Amino acid sequence: MATSVPAPAGPVPFKDVENNLDLQATTVPAERSLEEHDDAMLLVSALPIKLAAGTKLKLRCYEGFWLPERFVPAAVAMQRRLVPRPDDVVIASLPKCGTTWLNALAFATMARRSYPPAGADHPLLRLNPHECVPFLDALLAEAGGEARLAALPSPRLMYTHMPHAMLPRGSKKVVYVCREPKDTAVSLWQFRRSAHPEIPFGDTFDSVCDGGSTYGPFWDHVLGYWRASLECPDRVLFLRYEELLRDPGENVRRLARFVGAPFSEAEEEAGVVRGIVELCSLGSLRNMEVNRTGLMDGLGFPRKALFRKGVAGDWANHMTPEMARRMDEVVADKFRDTGITFQ
Ligand code: PAP
Image 1 (cartoon, rainbow, N blue to C red):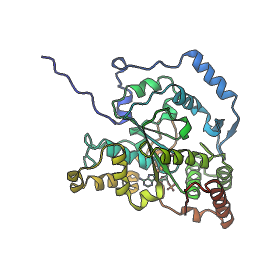
Image 2: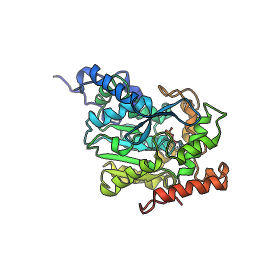
Image 3: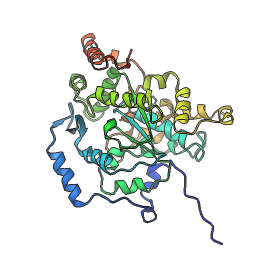
Image 4: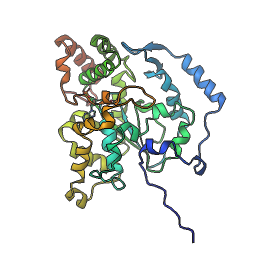
């Protein structure tokens, strides 16, 4: 009698499976035709262009946002072709707002039945969080990316820096993390210094304030998700980096409830939440061999650049009072009457 082997339930560590996906066994969506590819290239080349402050990263202004040039085709694919599954979970953020941490927490939470957080073979002990969770912006910009995504078992966990308006229509579960803008600007600059030690903070700071930093304007990015979370709280969970720092356990519970996998009493008693928080803490992730060495696949920066101080208020060590006042004024102006404050 033939025995059927159940398909592994997601999320699975993306890096483990991406080279072994059984594309034959999957209903693969139509890939971009050459014509569509040419159209996308034409579209990209017609967009306004500039370099991200102090770097060689080309940005294009697509539908009001400064996206990395090479990821614009991913925005188009997300808007036009990607069909979300009802149980997909998408982590969304601006760069440097806590993406790595949230990816780790979400992966550890959603995959806890296959991988108990205290297990000696937990994927986060040998893979960077971004290697467990596929980055849509890079994946969908590549030929074959859509098929690799389609071959993943459900529920899929993915992440993006794209603005809310660029997510696939009908996305059911989106978790956004937002961070105090002055700290985000400092974190972005520190990250860039890992490749360009000489770049001055002023250029990065100006570009954030002017709305021209990568994936910016930051206020439109935040407000897109904020408004969606108010309109559809079942669909968009709006988290804050500072709240995660203050009470990671409670935010992990919110996350678990939101994705439809609340912790049972037995799990609470067994300390599963605490285990997830500890596994994903900055101290724990930063000390792992995988996060201390090597470069991020396809993105080229050192993995260790993702783990720095991880505190609130570091801006005070890098900004003059005038800079802080200028950024606070931008924030007060852009977020007036929206219900968001950053104090
Ligand atoms: P990304 O967008 O390039 O993925 P992202 O992870 O969003 O970067 O942001 C990196 C910031 O998160 C760093 O902040 P800092 O520069 O102010 O220190 C990094 O230290 C912080 N970070 C990374 N992992 C954790 C963690 N486990 N807990 C708390 N903060 C973390």
